[in-house]
Amino acid sequence: MQKLLTGLQPSGALHLGNYFGALKPFLDLYQEYESTLLVVDYHALTTLKNPEDLRASIVSVVKDYLALGVDPKRVTIAQQSSVPEHTELAWVFETLVSVPFLMQAHAYKDKVAKGFEANAGLFNYPMLMASDILLYDTDVVPVGADQRQHVEYAREAAAKFNSAYGATFKEPKERVLKSAGVVPGTDGEKMSKSYGNTIPLFGSKDAIQKAVMSIVTDSEGDKPKNVYAIHTLFKTEGELEGLYSGNVGKYKALKEVLTEDIDAYFSSARERRESISDGDVVTVLKEGSEKARARASAKMADVRKKIGVTI
Image 1 (spheres, one colour):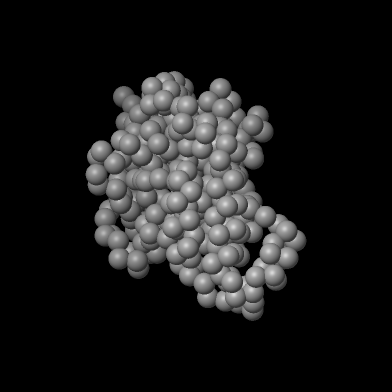
Image 2 (cartoon, rainbow, N blue to C red):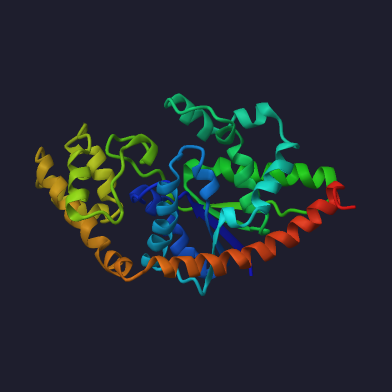
């Protein structure tokens, strides 16, 4: 059976962009593969510096996964920091790629352009992500159309290592799904916690409404394009046609309907989430991380031997 891997950063409450950009595609696919779901907490350190917030976010994001239907009996749910082979392999890859190569990373350039600190972790981020993917002989990585480069970087890292030390790593392929496209935020840009333009996944109805009402309503034709773009995630264009044609210029009314649709879509998952305890999360992560570490350790033993550090 082919192997699939994905992960999300525990850097705050999940939002619609996380769900439609990564989690829903994973939910639609994971039972067809031998799947691994990583809580990539070391990635979060590039922007999140509050330890209490990080601890809370790790627990929260796993609760979100479980509430939305991820079955820990069918997927390995692991915590990146509990598998030190991730950072060890990332260092090996960093000795094989060049600075100009890393400078081409879209995510790095985008964050720096937005005013984020150009720390070394952010710069080297693609090689840690490559190690996340390659440690587990991953065949498929579900990504949004804007995330292809992450998998391209993993392929390049695999090719560099294989060329230098012999066949060791599979070169993974991305699986770009229509549902994993760029989800617009309330300002029309890509939805991201970093940009403060998100709509919460498990927020109260009031929190959802507050975010929806803040959506910028620049029009394209007779439709508020940003409101409509988000609405198409929940209903087909056919279902929305009558609503939008019957409410031309009535932006508040359209936002109220969008709020209701978002709230209804996640209501059952929100109820399930309430029944999941912190202890449940600790158990899931412990079991999954032990399983992941056994696989990663075997892979790194081979890597260490090939690079010459095993005496």
